[in-house]
Length: 81
Image (tube, rainbow, N blue to C red; front, side, top):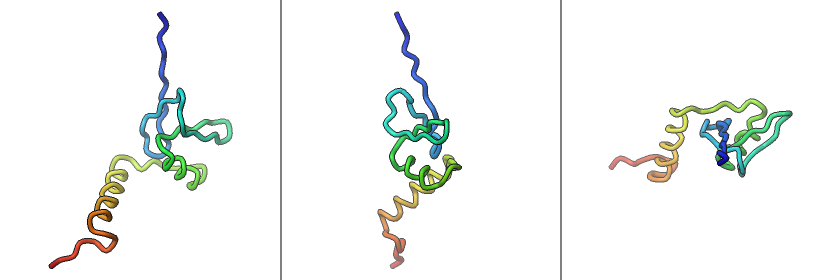
């Protein structure tokens, strides 16, 4: 019985593990192949030049919080009555 070995690589933007076998989003830069978890991460990588830096958990949390606040209250924020 043969075993299938699945290899994962971290997304260079958010560090989420991405299965390299059949990956949908990837870019080749120089001799290196980069794998991405989503098209948004790939677009950020392409826009950021050759040295995209991961945000880390805290940065991703703050981004989600800001999007949730914008959705709930709009760009101007909550109003006090």
